[in-house]
Image (cartoon, rainbow, N blue to C red; front, side):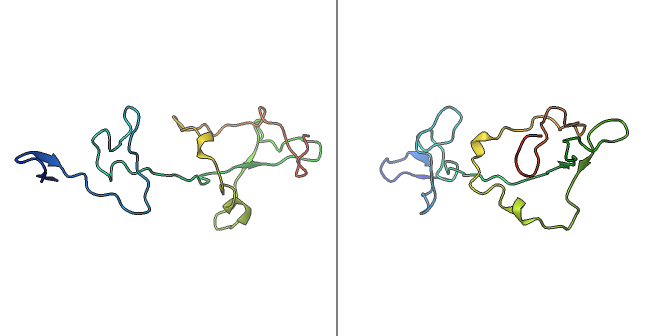
Length: 128
């Protein structure tokens, strides 16, 4: 919104709005980062804090010798939790999760993982 700056007669300035209590704002920032010092509004300079949650999770089965359950073609058989089933431990999986360890998925993930690059771990947490 354009408005007259009371301190400078005849000068038009961008109304940057006002900061809101309880929100965090970037006063200065690097190139491409909205900030008050870069001329952005308070709303544009608000710092967004993001949390993570599970989008998809798959499982595989293995026996006591660490052998994975395989499909007929030799690939690892994959499993998901059935629709409508609530498994409470997964609800807490991302509590206190540091989003800095994440990277954006740039392409659609292949659904042909065969488990060969991941060691089997038994429920006691020991390598198999």
